[in-house]
Amino acid sequence: MFTAFLPRGVQAAKKVAWQFAAVCLGLTTITAAATSPAVASVQDSRQLLNSRVYVTNRFSDTVSVINPLTNTVTATIPVGDGPAGIGADDLLGRLYVANAEGGTISVINKNTRNLITTIPVGGAPVGVAVDSLRHRAYVANFSGGNVSVINTRTNTLITTLPTGSGSFGAAVDTLRSRAYITNTRSGTVTVINTRTDTVVANPAACVGAGSVATEPSRARAYITCREANRVSVLNTNTNTLSPPIPLARPQGSAVDALRGRLYIGNATNPGTMTTIETNTLSTLATTPVGNIPAEIIVEPLLGRPYVANAASNTVSVLSPTSHNVIATIPVGNGPGDLIVA
Image 1: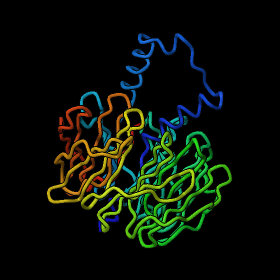
Image 2: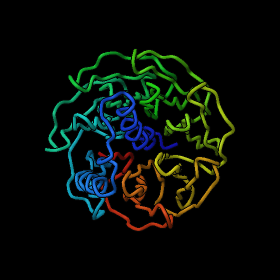
Image 3: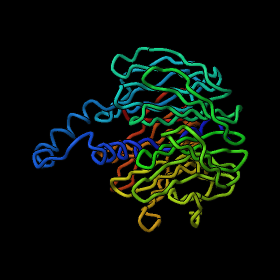
């Protein structure tokens, strides 16, 4: 099992959750002008111009920076030893890169692309999820069987929480104040209250639980179970399992909450990506991509999935409408995780 290439869950859903939560909590307001097509178009264009796709390269010790407008690599950022997972505090403009071999987190200034600091964490950190609303980063430590919790304002380690054996993927549901950590060896999901930074549940998922993606609007977390040939569906209101989605060797995952899509990378030969409609959980398409599609992220404005192909050293970019590959981008050696920020 390619544990090195199965970091966290989905950050696109987290970004949508943050935006919706900000409105609900009164941190921002929606006005008639703000929702007019003209203003929305300008805001979307500015966000698209400023956003980038960041890809960890496990065996190059770097992060590739992709411009989603041109689908080209525009910069390469050196990080620590064996970068696996990546997350972002969107409000602070910081990237958090889990260095699996180094046992550290590299904190990068997104605007300058300079290293801010390096934070020691647990053994073999592979998954990162960030709650931008509460300024917390949750780091899944595979060999430690625990989660390091980092205050992203001060970049300090504030606590370490026990999870299960082989802590692996990480995702956040900001609306419910929850973080989800998959435990590959235990076959469980550790649920953390992000308000109190305490463990509240450890429901069963599957043996070999890998990537996790949250869909706050439907109260779901999707967990890939490569060895069991299925995707487990967790009800995040009750922490109980719904009927699973059968798939061959599912590995990476991402949710497009705005368009109601679940994307699953399958480590078949060759690798494929399955597009699932989340209302009915029906399959819309299965598209050939690169070898070992380790993880996926969705660029929220264009709705394009970006797939990190760990054994091909490429990123596949797909159309959300035709489901075809529209670009293949060479990156570093062993791409494992992605984030849009």
